[in-house]
Image (cartoon, rainbow, N blue to C red; front, top):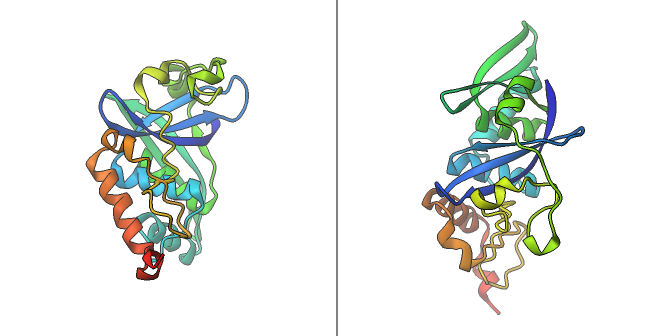
Length: 209
């Protein structure tokens, strides 16, 4: 198993579907791109941004349940790629021993980020589905660690750390920074989720000026 870090959440230009990009911690720092749903993309992006919602979302509840039941998530393991779908397991240790809980990769990653568990990927999966990073010029507008292949498929200018700039000069704890010029590139479910989170945070006083 190779330990990975969550490099970011982006949008696949081809399918207009959000993806989470994992980066191998050790050299050669290979990348793994996993398609995720809108709510899962928002949940992962919020963790990357360090944002805690005013009311717990589904992954927050699951993470809290694990802790309250005196259990511990040792790791998230992406163990297989079947028919184009990544298969993951939550390695959970509790009073009754250690268990491997079958999970969607997106849900497992969202939970791992909330409990501080490492994300591991099987070498076979990484070898077959991973990509190799190359050095890019700054003019490309891409993170130099990201693979050239992503340039054609992903909107990497859109850093969905839920920095959604609504062009409202609002002083919000949630740093929503949505570039309206890029809004058309986002799937509807991501936009709805982001706007819902914005509504949870905004107050009438924010518009006073």
